[in-house]
Amino acid sequence: MEPGHHREERARRARSGTVGRRFARAGTEPATAQSALGLRLILSGVFLPVFAAAAVVFAMWAADSGPEDGPGRGPLTVLAVVYGALALLAAADLPVVVRRLRNERGTR
Image (tube, rainbow, N blue to C red; front, side, top):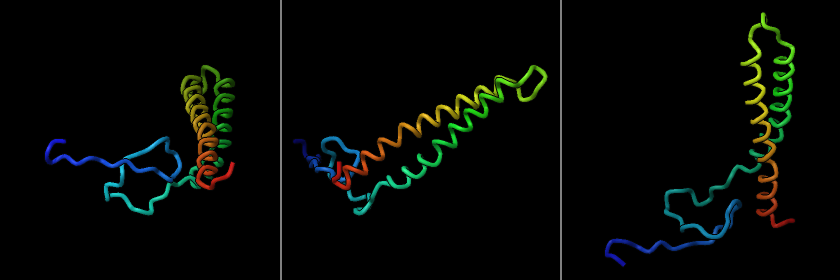
């Protein structure tokens, strides 16, 4: 090894969300840091139906809007797509969080 360079030790990570190994602690992060999986679970569970309902409302509004109505069909469709994407993101996050919580607790 070159002088001045230290070999980075690899340590096994006991927290969720890891595959394999990671580098040892550098000393700048808190030793007792924990991920906010419970908060993510609550937020995904609450906002999944909110975003899905908003996507449906904006899609229906866009379908019922006429040429003289404001806002037009285009912006309402964009809002429906954005809320639909957010609902899909929240739906995809739920199984990930549940799997990580189960891994932390050691249950299947």
